[in-house]
Length: 239
Ligand SMILES: C[S@@+](CC[C@H](N)C(=O)[O-])C[C@H]1O[C@@H](n2cnc3c(N)ncnc32)[C@H](O)[C@@H]1O
Image 1 (spheres, rainbow, N blue to C red):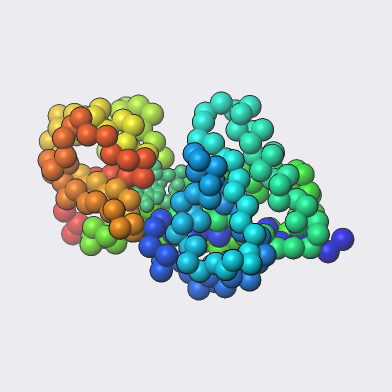
Image 2 (image 1 turned 60 degrees about the vertical axis):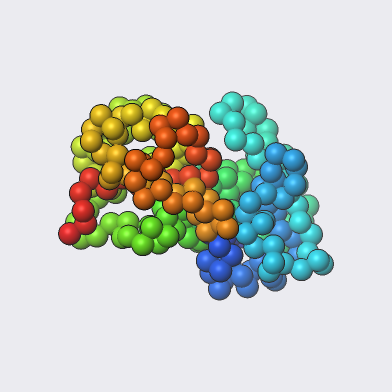
């Protein structure tokens, strides 16, 4: 059987021009574009980032990939989403799965990759990296993310303030993702440490609605930054 290839394409966090040349070539050459869907069941953020580069002849396949913590629910969703791709791959057609940001950096593509390997062991899978949100954040803040011997801690979410405390012990730069839901706790924690002025927040990096807070003093502790927000904390000025 001549199987099609599943491509995982990192499309970057917002600005479509951050897509790589290879990513652009692949998404314009495949018939099927698979994308995580939004809450309304429509193609979500990754699709919006590159839709201007796609053509009306391409099939857009929105996949239900929920943000929940229930393992059974997630497993079922990954199985179902993957089984929607298999018929195309078996028919020899290439599919590009779009991921917001980078494809290997906290991306659902990893679960699709693993599930496809179990559903179709001979599957051909390849990927193209994209710009991940911490790198894009540093760019829009016009600051280095790290320099010299600085160490970076990236917390995919703040599950406890102790984790943040631990990261501050060894890293010069701490990046907090998914910070919106715990923002108030983080704000007071940083205030207590005297670090409010060392922390910056960016919402919607690379989108028209992008918002930069140059220090956390510019934002109320009770604010509720959007899910697409990232906080970068630098303990001291870069050398
Ligand atoms: C599941 S992770 C996805 C990461 C993504 N694959 C990447 O490479 O950046 C989602 C988190 O990434 C961060 N993020 C992704 N895109 C963003 C954007 N455009 N603006 C701000 N934060 C973003 C936020 O912290 C968000 O909660």
